[in-house]
Length: 158
Image 1 (cartoon, rainbow, N blue to C red):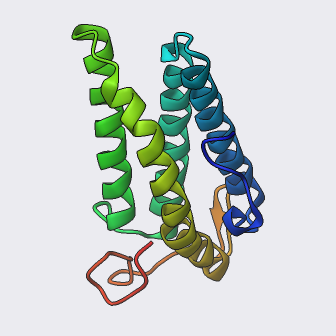
Image 2 (spheres, rainbow, N blue to C red):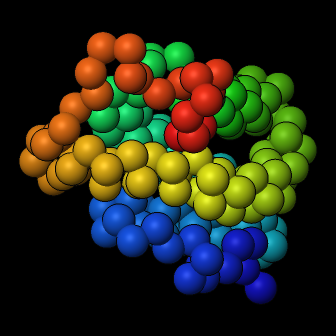
């Protein structure tokens, strides 16, 4: 049984992001399979963490190019998730405590769909509205001064 099933509900119709999200789900499932098999799941977890770091960096680059404020709730959530993932890895490596890694399997599987459906969908919407092409990095209509998105501005929280 998979940790998180890929479904149409996770598709945001942004090919680069959808591909990255599908990879995240596959890596999370590979990690879960290693746990279920009782083998050393640390390599699978490290692959998931490396992918997540690159995934979040890509989204944050897009946010910057689309005019999101540097400190927005989307990026803050990324930072919190990465901090927890890194801390769990530290526990595993320095304290030989793998329990936080086991807990993260379930927590990430619950968190990710909500994050994608809300925050990532809002990012995709903003990218579409501004004519942002993630392949070229070009933005047809960049945000003007005072228009940058943040969580408290009344705009959608991307």
